[in-house]
Length: 111
Length: 112
Image (tube, rainbow over all chains, first blue to last red; front, side, top):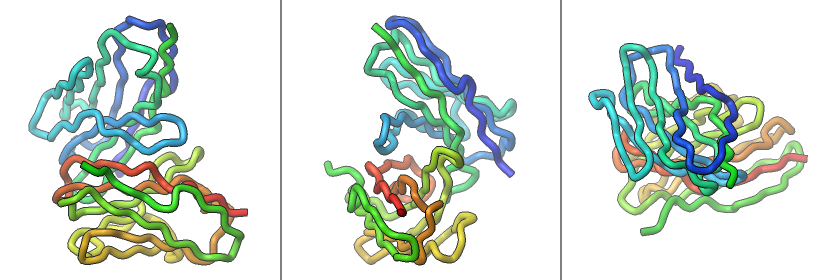
């Protein structure tokens, strides 16, 4: 059974820091992996999608890497801003139907 | 380009009642999935529809059901509501199944 873990559960940093959020999964047989952010009481916003054949994806200040063999993905946020404050969720897709989510990392960036 | 639209945004229901939630996917997206989010269990998969067919169902009781229409819009229904059904229900759409998922703002259901 695929399980997804995110560490740390919460993170509080000053503005401007570079951050690394971690996601680990137990079964390396995945179709793809997707990172999301969620603001309080809102839906999920897609950040990056990494296919199983890819090693990384970049969008603006965000970079996500994937190491299937070790069951790990990291989300790197450069030059963090207060607007980055949110919960970040990692989700793996074992095949083409469902996403299995981690419990999230709650990020607070203070000025 | 319009995103995923979920209606209603908020609902308050009484135990024992039933409820229907609606999801309109992004134009051109034919796959719709539903998830339940609670503080205790996090995000859990309910079911996925593609071309009006349910492709997969999560580990939820039969009180939870859904359907998809020919225009790809989807509804989910929960019958005989229980207090534990209080949650944020999220809908996601993808172009074909397995591609990037885009989520709506959710429906906040409170059962009293």
